[in-house]
Image (cartoon, rainbow, N blue to C red; front, side):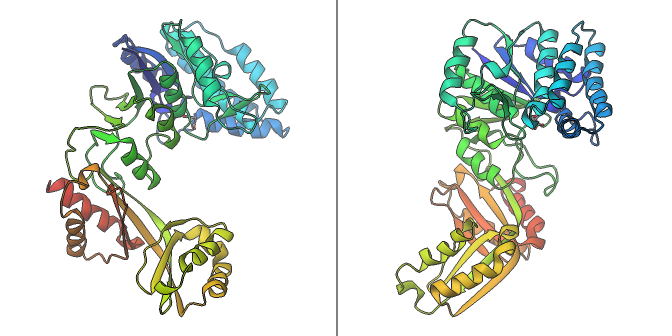
Length: 439
Ligand code: ASP
């Protein structure tokens, strides 16, 4: 059994957290490959080391005063080293880093040092080999992640190593410069390593006990999702559920490697298991609810629209030409609505309206802003009758007016549009009917 374990920034924010991490790793000999993030926040208004590195680089590369920020960064690592009683000394690394900052080695290089240095400290503490991600994770000339080269070199390199620490978040370009993934990208590195060693499980350790059925800022103490499929997760992540970087699922998904989201501060909690597919019956008909505010619906009306060939295409062409992607497109016989993100639309509003008039000569165009979209997601919905009915009766009881309904063809999700101000009420009504009353 081989497990790859990734620890997020808050799991490695202090010496105390390092101790918990070590205990977790050492309690299971299958946990052979470790991917750390940079030290994160120790308390809510603390600053992540990655953010300090961006700031320090911006100052140093512009010739401004950067030493005080640099000192704070050094202090973060030295506190961890000293409190753990380690003998590792990062002075040489800090000197190299400082001269590279002044020499404008790039923002990505700067940010990557957070993981690089934390990886060195963690490897020293665990007594594991340290592998610089620049030697095993590769991007192509265009800056896209090169999965084939990476997989070949990384699996070869790890094949003879029993235990290793590989820092997350970065790799190297063909010209040897450092490139990072987008923010939160250590999750992706963990997934790449899991694929390379053909791991049995990819454990992603963070500060929550898994994905919650709904956003805890919207629903009071929502329950944890025990098992979720990759497809369900994708739907929920798109609508704003964050815990895992969206791109982290691609490397492991095709390999059939499950991801287990676990809590460093409560290691006995089961967490959430993310799988390709499962025969396990979900606990509830729905797996999760997620939503976003800030959409606009543009509704176009024209008599005999349905018999006009190419009408839909001509409408969408206008949005495409203005660089606006659409989220949904519910339609009736003589009406059609296009739902788009409000901030994208506002900038191009008049161009879009003029374009629709020119392209389709409609009877009327109506614009409604401040719409929230709520995605109700669940593999269990396919085999259950009356799910939509239950959602709408719950919303009616809560006095929420439904603006739009869209059921995905996979029957995995139902998207509901409501006014922004009804978002919290609507989400709670749906949560209550499926989870609290458990039908
Ligand atoms: N340290 C990086 C960030 O703050 C990457 C990560 O934590 O995954 O975004």
